[in-house]
Image (cartoon, rainbow, N blue to C red):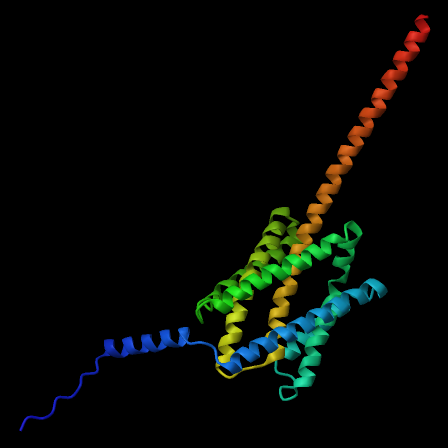
Length: 273
């Protein structure tokens, strides 16, 4: 009696089924719980940005920001990242808002410089940052899941290189290195918006739904982009002011020379008479 044929299970077939499962996971729509988590993260991000604006205002009124507020913000970021008060949502949200307030106080001096040049610079930088952030976040949300997670290694390498360049530039004082840091950092943190957004979604799908931590990561991206855009706009405004000043001084010198020539011509005419 012939034995019944057994179905063959070869390695290529197993690989194909695994790839099909992975593709289905990438294309599967987000669940209601994940969508709610994403909405909660962006609400927390908005609250943190409001706290940062309050921190900037506090510095402008009292000049209280600086090194201490920067160290305090750094310590709060470490505490939130290390899982402090993991079971206490209110405490973690308090840490998040504290990070926003302290970070706002830290960048308050830069905002004060921009306001002294042209108050419109701050509004334009904030609006530009919001547009850039929204565009890259939307690109990450509508893209296939896990599409941009490979950026993590690339962006980590770029960040390490920029840190090394920053240390070198403390001694070299090279304008070219500063330009690379400024514009390279802007591009890198735009990439981090995409990466962190997709990473947040994958963590939420996997069950990790830490609203405060995910909002903090996006807040760091937002502030990093804002600071770089603001610095670029301040430098451009200063260049325009210097150019206008040279132009005005040149025209004033030309008009004074013309008046002196006319006075000399009138004096010569009077002398001949």
